[in-house]
Image (cartoon, rainbow, N blue to C red; front, side, top):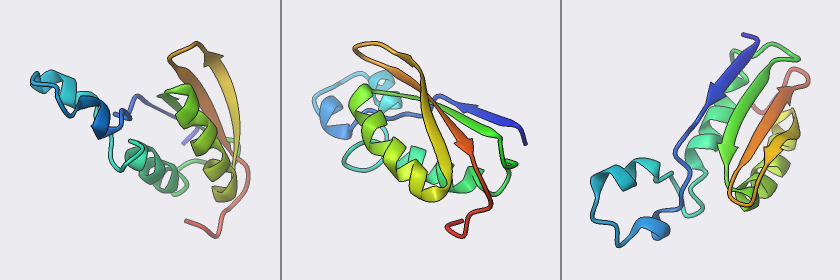
Length: 101
């Protein structure tokens, strides 16, 4: 596979604790920082992405900082494709075969 593009829920649950609207909860990610689904997707994508293939994710800027360093340990080269005050579109390029799959 050459590319996977995902807009995975990533908002920490604490942000939506008081939200009454069920639609708001569609944005809630897994784990304390909301990045559990992204971490899972990064590991699973290694099974299908070819070396040089890319995983594209959207998240908050502070989340990108944390996740990009984790991505490097899995065998990805992270790079920002877009950044604003509220969102980062990040590109994770698979470098080589990884023993961490």
